[in-house]
Each structure stands twice: as structure tokens, then as C-alpha cells.
Length: 235
Image 1 (cartoon, rainbow, N blue to C red):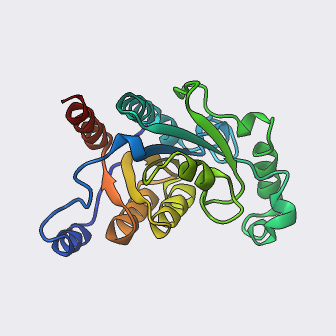
Image 2: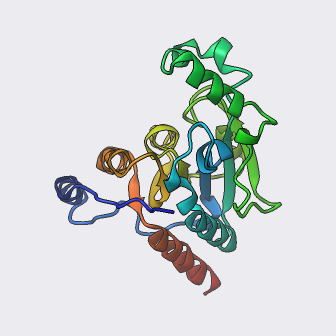
């Protein structure tokens, strides 16, 4: 299972660091009680070989997602698993999307992402616990109006910080992260817990997000931030 080769642009890193007064990261600490891990679309259609949108990079990030889920729960945060379900709704309400693939490919995707079908199920190796929440989205972004109830769930839980992971980095994850930032969430994108179809697409997305919309961390860095917060709380 290949992992993406992550390459943030030195130019963007330099510009971001200048804008932040010499700091690489906007967020130097986390409050786990107001932090949520949001896992986007880790469903069979993208993770399982032979499925219509399969990418070998997707399964490789599962261990990092599970580490982040355990660290978030352990620190007192919440974990949300988001599933894309398009088959019963998109042909009627999202006709613009229907133009983006040929008919055969679109029919395969819609069938796979119909609730109850194998493609729509979450990948079996994900560490989903009873206290976690699972929700459905009907657009690329989980936070755009009418897509899902994730925003309402986050508000009810008092969440102000999102750690975004999943697939695809440059489509549903990026769309969700951009909307999160515009809705005033402190937004973190995890470079080695997101995946898409190629290194080029993955890094283009991370660079665009890091430049204006999200702070970009590795799994190790986020786990360390959560651990620091737990240690401070224990004291």
C-alpha cells in the first residue's frame, strides 16, 4: 500500500511563515473538549480494490486515521465518520454533477454510493467505536447547506476545531476543510491521513489549503498536540 510523498511548496511555506510572524503553524495547542476528528468518505468505493473509484493510497492511511481517532477520544474529543450517499438523491437534486462523468461511469458511482450497497459501507478496518457518530453527506463538502447534519452535530457538541482526514484529499476533504474555515472552525488538515489518486493531486490540495484555509500537520504532530493537552489537563 503506497503512501503519498508529501511535498509542501517551499515558497508557500515561506509565505505562510512570514504571514504568521515567523511561526509555521497557526495552532500551537488544542483543546480536546472542543475538538473533533472528521473522517471523510473512507468507504469501500474508494478503499476496496476493484471498486469504481479505488485508489491504492486510501487503505494506506487507515492506520493513521485509527491512531488519530484513538488519540482524539483519549483526550476527550469526538470522532465523526462521514459517508457519501449520492445514489438516491444526486440524479434529482445535483444534475450539474451528472455532467462530469460519462453515463456508464456515473451509473457505477451512483450504484456504489447508494445506501445499503457494498460500495457505500465504511471500510472494515476502521476503528469505529460506540461513542463515535456516523453521518451521511450528499455533496462533496459535509458542511455546505443541505449536505448533511454534521454542522448541527458539531454545534450541539460545542466543537470549534476540526481535524480533517479521509478521501479524496482534493475533493471532499478539501471542500469540507474550506467550508469549515469559512464557518469559523479552527481547521487542521492531516497530510498523511488524507489520500487521493496521485501525489500531484494530493500535494496541490495541501498547498492550496495551507496557503489560506487550514493548518497542515502530520499524524504524529496532531497526536502530540492532543497528548500535550491531556497532560496539561491532568496537571
